Image (cartoon, rainbow over all chains, first blue to last red; front, top):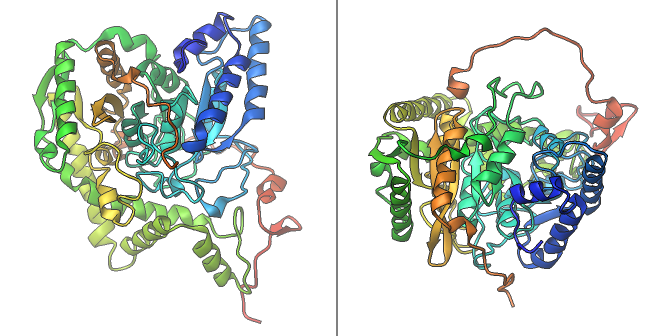
Length: 490
Length: 44
């Protein structure tokens, strides 16, 4: 293909029209991984054999006169937190080294049913705990716009794979911003659907009341295609919602005329980089030019979201991660008695950030502290959710910058976990409220991409996507490519 | 609104196939005779 980074929509159309084959597209993307990933380290596993076999199946079905799926032949990268039967799932952790799950995540099954080709598993912060992908036990993923900088996290590998065209689409998970923040820092589109919109079956749990699977792509149209494929009720996940899923692409042309965009100006007052704020104001102006109206809304409890999140998320993590005990899967460090085996396995298997969160979560749930921390946090969570309910009486979507700054340098925030946590200030409220969020490329600041975030009513991904599409029809930020140089280490 | 206002729903309790035992044990660091093996639990 002449285009170096064909979109998923373009690939699916060409494959359906037999202008190219799924196998040829898959080989092109595998070649690009071989050329580009050496200095970026987005992938933990490249599933070349499985991908080519799947591509041949798609081609054979088409040759036999079958209908092309909406993602026919589209190469997809999958965060290494989603299980694929027989393929290693590490979650970026030593404790799952060598683990090959006996089942496949519903989101992956649905993408493949739509014709997509899984080409690999992507690097991530260990158990999705982090905002820079530096917490992986295996490798550090670099930002293709500046390889001295982080790609964001925790779905950093997925964002880099899409940004560089190593994959046309990727799956990530978002517990506090882990799809939207790396999408913003890598200049791509990321959607965190409504809680319950996408099945979590086959997704290794971090914080079960916050985790949500979602797509990363270069255009809103591609993200809409993927969302249409993966959303919807799944009886294998009791929290998946029995809510009808529209064809998100079909609604993209409806435009932004008359849409009310709410901006919580007082929430944005402190700590936002001047360049990021200027890009955000320009994005609002572009949306106004597209016919939207900008209004002010209040989210008075949003400043407490990060503190609330780090109680709720760590509490749930401390419980979820109890399963990694050296008995059923993954690493076991042998010891003479069971308690020592548990302790030494978890000490050796988990990295520092995961241990920090397990300890915090165990503390906030412990007798005597539960009311002061966990119960209180759940109450604040309700207030944050009500803030959004109030805001959505005044507007159709809420807009903020996705992150307060562009990509930071590798190592810049690893010594100070609180600084790293504040990276999520604009993304965690959506997880606490359970609402959908979309991050769109919103221009470059100092040569680095920044994102605009749109937050919507529950199950109203369609409005986010059509506003995002209208924005991309008027702007070219999503077409900008990272430089081809892949390694600044010399 | 999402989890906060989730309604309780029930389904019939139907027996359905689940993960076969061999597969459930396949990833275990130590398994024997259809069981997970662990170090000594009680003193002795």
